[in-house]
Image (tube, rainbow, N blue to C red; front, side, top):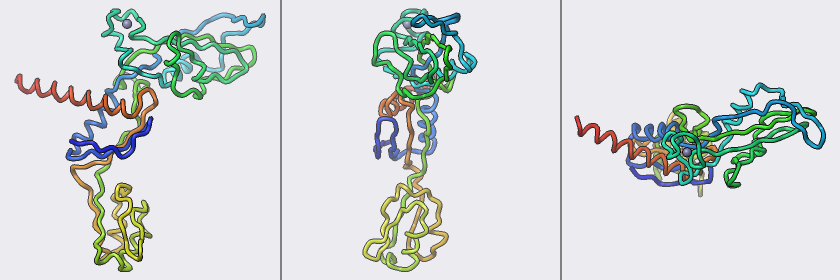
Length: 277
Ligand SMILES: [Zn+2]
């Protein structure tokens, strides 16, 4: 299969998957959703008891249950660098926890305030600060405080959605739209430009032209409601328009590279198993 990038932004991408099959496009989608490793906060320790700040005593209490705060912290995107981190159970430390398999964060706030994800501070490397800094975690009233230590570990979305890097992953058959030049000036053809909900066509010099074929959703409105227009629309069965976004823990390019690496190693593993039978 070939990949032709249409758009590659930091957190979202769109590309053409060519010379492939629906099965392969779906395998790519499923791998991207569930097999890409990332770091996410997995252990949260809450300080209990009073907290003294500038001779004022604050109570370690919030309006939310600790479990809800822990869950929200788990969903905050944590930057992931494969050259720095590995799975804890594969780490040379033997799963005890070390700088190669864990990131530690502290969160220390006193009320009144809204605690935000950006208040999570990494212990050590400042580049490991969380990606989205404005995710509200909890609202503190006057006299309330939180002191939390968190540990982020590497995992995949097979275990929990907090380890899911990609979202909005989807594909469609690549639309192949054409307009017969001999009929392009006919009223039926010109009507296609008006009725197409995706604005695929434009009228230039009194003739219908196909302007944005990839925007076509194969709804077939132009075919069904404007007979004799000379327009043909079909979905290619071996080319796909694929798009996805990431939560920021990896860039879209890193996510795509890792997906292809994992899919390729899975395919080689499967091939080896078949050959052994
Ligand atoms: Zn370790």
